Length: 359
Image (tube, rainbow, N blue to C red; front, side, top):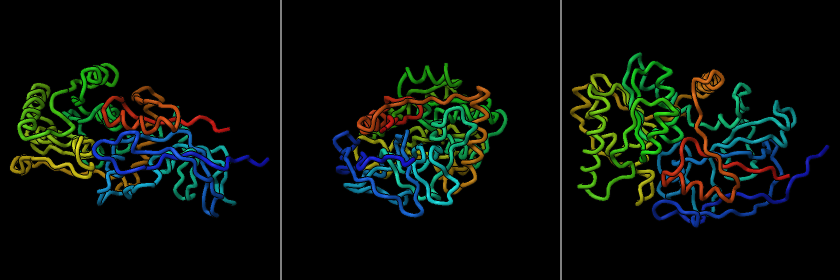
């Protein structure tokens, strides 16, 4: 039986690089012709795609040295997606109905090179869990930070897609105390009651400061809370924020502390600029005398992590040892609003847009 395909499908395009934080008017949901697959392409009907803060950097017009290319006016957005195979090349191990992940989200249908389709791990209780950002947290904590039994771990931006899993992963790897940061008391309460954080700090801005006085005030507010939550200092930092929180974390480092930088939301989600830089002032002398290592984590440098993470994630989910906080938003028309809400900090955990069956 031949599958009936639509002639046109909808996708989200960048109408213009935003000035400051993106708004829905910076995007357009347009009808586009559905082309026939090339010999090496798989036609996938997308079910969900990920909404992520790093997209701000890609659409700002000044992205450089990023592992994926920036976007220009008129380009279709992209990012991690989960979908169902509709058509596969002859001889492919993929079959119609198989679930795969790929990087051509923000559209209803995607033509994906077969080599870029990853079958969904059947051990996951919910296939959408394969869109989690947990592999970045897991990779950073195992490959860079090397969490040890009893470590005091600080996770900045703990209510985001990475942070909401990072604290739980650190605990499962042996951390003795896990501290998080977030922007609201409501999220802080959820992080403690639902995700097992020992303490969550809300002082200090993660969106950057307007001037030097604001920056110093943000630093003092955060440093005071950190000193109370970790009076003997921290062993590990998993940082998604940068800014004054990174400054204070350096000052709180114990001897031999290991810092893994996964994001830089203080710059990426700053109200001004393009999100392409995230300057921060740190005490270099303290890094030296305390023997602190500071490394940035990029998944492409650790290609083995994804499979290892999915295996452990599936087992932890099935045993109930980990929770996967997920915000679902329905409809491609809502996608630009979902990005706006995420950049404003109003969402919790991983955020996905779900696409209804197109018939």
